[in-house]
Image (cartoon, rainbow, N blue to C red; front, side, top):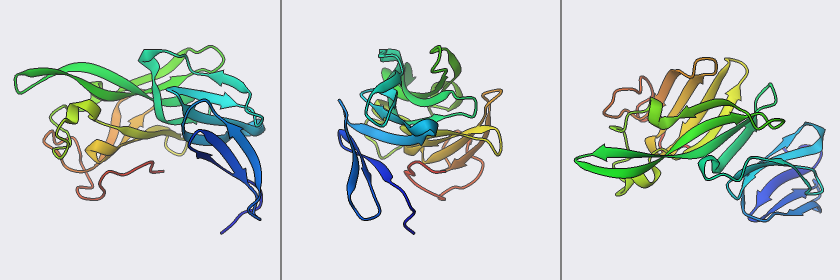
Length: 208
């Protein structure tokens, strides 16, 4: 059902807002393609583009952005935790030996950063918590995009971070205080780490 007010979404290399009558009331040209956008308090926007998380004003002025750092290349998702931290999905790389061959695998980190100080408050890697026995057998070069996490958000109702791991067809619940996995839900794989939900979904994207 249509709701009063402006609907805001990303469109290629711009952010647009439309009124209920279809009129365009917001247009922000961005320097790179925007992959996600979220409205924050105070009329601010949180978006992901160009490998960074960015907070901007409605006129397009940049208020904050994550560091332009190859070790912190943000993709797909950024959201706000209850304490005001910015929770981001970041690319991660490790050398992994499989079947006698060592390759550089691309996985993911979940990083929370304080936008006031750029201090890292939470840092969690799929390499430290998932088994490389588990991978998408339909990808001929699965190591190039092993996990493909496409969403991470903090859920106040249970105090956990929930992430969506597309290429393992898995949703994982993480204890925010300890970083330990509470539950893996999704496709059964060789490690046996998934405890519920085999064939429940496949290649899911941004569940909430």
